[in-house]
Each structure stands twice: as C-alpha cells, then as structure tokens.
Image (cartoon, rainbow, N blue to C red; front, side):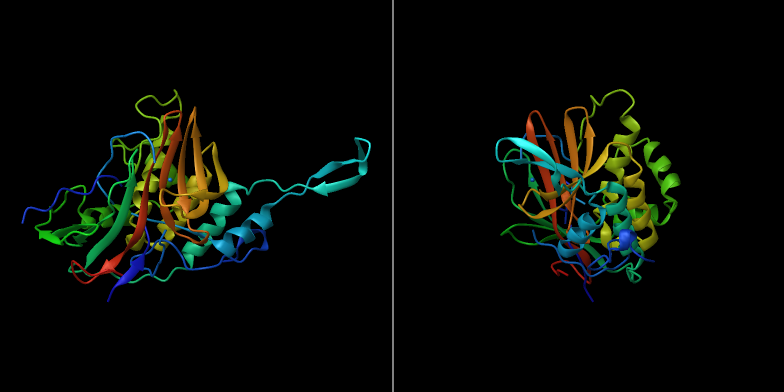
Length: 319
C-alpha cells in the first residue's frame, strides 16, 4: 500500500548496483506521521553548496485564509476626504499580517489530529524534488528502503536505476526514523536540542559561515526543523506538532502570505530573517504540509521543492 505526502539539493549519486486557536478550524489533513496521505504538486539564484536530497510540511488555501482572518487586528486608518483632509470619523480597518504563533499553533493542532500508520522495514520512502540554484535542474525521484538495504533514483525523463543501500548512512531512512522517534516532543526541549546540534542539518544554508554573531543557534534550529520536516511521512504526529511550536519560539520568525516556492506554488511563508538574508519554509495553504525552502539575499534566490513524497512498497512506485 502506498502512502502519500508531498515534499534537499543535488540528487544522490546513482546507486552502485484539540481546538484551533482564534476560533479557526484548520482545513485539510495533518502533516507529519509515519504514513500519511498527502498531495502537493506545485522559488532560483546563486549556486550554493547543496546537500543531498531528502523531505516535507503544510498550511492550506481556505485554512490559511481562515487563520489570517482570525489573527487580523483591525486598525483605524484615516481616509483622505475631498480637499486633502483626513477626517478622523472616516476610517477603514487595516489588517495586520498573520501572527506566527497563531499560524504555527494551528499547524500543530492539525498535526496532532493526523492518523499515522506503522511503516514496515521492507517498505520504501519515496521523494520527488526539484532544485533551483541559479538554473533549473531536472526534477528527480529517489527511493530508499526503510531498512537501508536498497536505493533507487530516477531523473526526470530518465530510467530507474536500482542499487544497494547504505545502512546507517546520512541518507538511510531507518537512521532518520530512529532520530525522529528519539526527538523531544516538548517544543522548548526540542528547540534546545536543535540549537545545540554539533552537525548542521539544513535543506539550504541561510547565512553560514557568515551568520551574525549570536544568531548561530537560531539558524541551526531553523535549519534542522526544515531538514526533518522533509521526511513528513515518517514523523510521529506529536513530533511534527512540536516542530511547528518550536518554530514559533525562534526570534525573528514571521509569516508571509502568498509566498511562491521554486516551482511557483503559492503557500504560507515561515520566514527567518538573519541580517540581509531570509530563509523561507513554504507550507501548503490547505493542510500545512511542507512544500519546500528558499533563501533570498543580496545575490538572489535559491530554492528546493518537494513535489511528492510518501511510503511505497517498492522502487518505481509512487504514492
């Protein structure tokens, strides 16, 4: 049985041989989970060193708009009258941007309602990704057997190439699954854990190695959350919820609506601003699942998109 989810840079080398806040009801399905049904089809710039492919998350069209409406804070704005004078009695409300805490709490509540299923060791984690690093590269698909004993890759329009896996390698899904299951589910503890990682994990580098002094921990945590969210179908629901809540606790994280990913899909931008750079996680505006990441700075933009992901029964299969 295939389980669907829609969701890091250059394709891997070919194998050798509760209630929503603000009275808003979130729409759509949850995000993380061992095996979740997800869909999501549908941000380019300087060549930045890219890590090998991996993961995915989301908000939702109607859901995102509902959240935005729920957190909009009306302000009275004077409307100029004929003659150029603004009359205090003639005012119209101006909405504030959505609040990160509210939006991400709604995402967490959706995640907690996600039904998950156990994944067998003989099943495969599937992901389809695209990269936009100053020039669009072909999309590629990658299959990893959950016990690390098999790997397969197919470039867009190419042939499926199957080989042996690399047990306990960085790309081994069983290793990733063990790490995910060992993560704290308390948002504060999770944030502290990610801030203190000795090995940086991020889909795309936001500012390093030249991050402003004092921002390193926040950048490391933001990057690690994105790294793991790409593996959405493998994430326990309570861990997914903790990731959203941890994101909301990182200083300088804001929400930007109608943010486009590298493939032009519009979603909710969860943004970390560090100096002159901005790192975006784009969430689906319908159910908060992860669509991809982009980084925008003075040199332009680079991006990666997760076009599809899920758990399948064999290489070549899709959710």
